[in-house]
Amino acid sequence: MVKTVIFARVSTGLQEYDRQINELTALANTNGWSVEAVFAEKISGAKSNKERTELLNMVNYVENNHIDKVLVTELSRLGRDTLQVLEVIEMLNKKEISLYIQNYAIETLTKEGKVNAMSQFLITILAEVARMERKTIRERVASGYQNFRNNGGKVGRKTGYRKSDKDMKEQYGKEIQLLKKGLSLRNVSAITHTSINTLRKLRIICA
Image 1 (tube, rainbow, N blue to C red):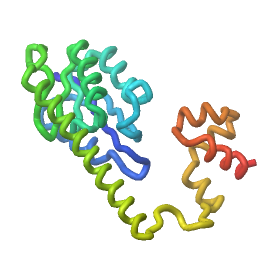
Image 2: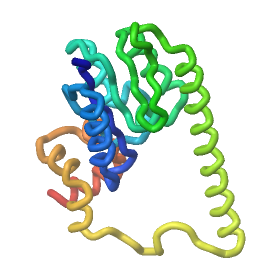
Image 3: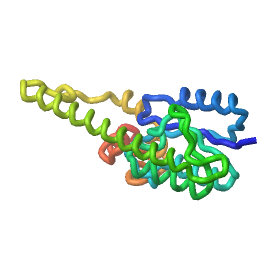
Image 4: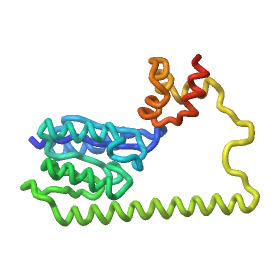
């Protein structure tokens, strides 16, 4: 039986990856593939691959457990930077593990385990187009903000706005737990990607 793992990603803590996992599980069942493990992360796709613990765990797992395919719903689930996406695919190719991209129904390797040149070419184009689209959206948003400011508008929190201690504790529960364990601000920031200034405030709140 073909052995697979599922990889899912969302960019923020407000999003959920259940839909991705459910769709890929259904895909595996339809094709008679076994799902050996599920890896899911909540992290910006702009982070470097070396900063993505769950991605690295997945790569290590597939290598040590003779996995045949990695399943993703979309190419962007691997990352938002073209070079980083291709880097992950290259890592999998060297281990003779195929990447299956659900929304395009394409794989990076052939049935014989050889690199699928056509899919590789298509993936490169798709990743670059997606990057260009995001760049265009960011530029439009920035232009809109600037136009709003030029016309007297104010962007950001209202003057004097401050989150309550209760809100801070609810939003940063994981950070607070790590601080209570005695981890340094720098280490907690590296783990959670929360700013040092915010962590200082949390330490005062929990003192």
